[in-house]
Amino acid sequence: MMTISVTPTRSTEGLKTRVIFFIAAAVMLVAASSQALSQNASVVRPASSNEAMKSEEAATPPKIGQAAPDFRLPYATLEKIYLKPEEHPALSSMRGKNVILAFYPADWSGGCTKEVCTLRDTFAELVKLNAAVLGISGDYVFSHHEWAKFHKLQFPLLSDHDHKIARLYGSYNEAVGYNNRTVFLIDKEGVVRYSNLEFKAGDAKDYNRLREELTKLK
Image (cartoon, rainbow, N blue to C red):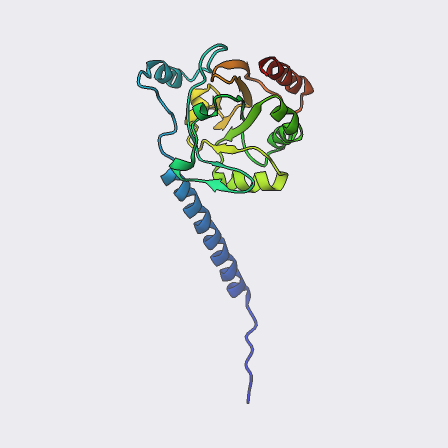
C-alpha cells in the first residue's frame, strides 16, 4: 500500500501562523470585553455629591485634610481576578485602616515594576503600621493578575481602564494617555493625610517620606 506524506509548504505554515494569531487576538478581545461589560459605576457618590462632582470635573487631586473621593473598581490579586461588581469593595469599606493608594502608568514597565516590588519588599513593615496598599493603573485585570503572580505581589491591583478614578484624583496624564506616578496616604477615617504627585520609583527619599508620614498615623 502506498503511503502519501504531505510536507507543509510555506503557504500552509504561513496560514497556520495567521490562524494562531487571530485566535489569540480573539481571546484577548473577549477577555477585554468581559471586563468592560462588568465595570459599572466606579465612583461612589454620597447623597449630596456636588463636591465630588466638581472634583471629578476639575481633575485636581484632593488636598491634604479633605475626604478621599470614594470609588470601587474591578481588581486582581496573585490568586484571583475579581470582575463581578458585587465583589468590588468601596474605598470607604477600608475605614479603620490607613490606605496607601498608588497610581502608576502601566504593568510590566521598568519603573512600575521597581515601584511595586519596593512596596512588596516593605509590605510586612507597612502592615505593622496598620496600612493597606492599593495599586491602580489603566491595565485590565487580566494583566494585573499575571503581573501580580510573576512578582508575587501581596496587595490588590485595581483596574481603572477608563481612567475615571485617576482623573478624580488628578493623576491622569491626558497628553500621554497614562497615569502619572502619584501616591496618596489616606487615614483610618478616610481623610487624605499625605500626597506625592511626582513620586519617583527609584528614589529612596520618596519611600522614606511615605513611611514617616504613615508612622505618624499609626
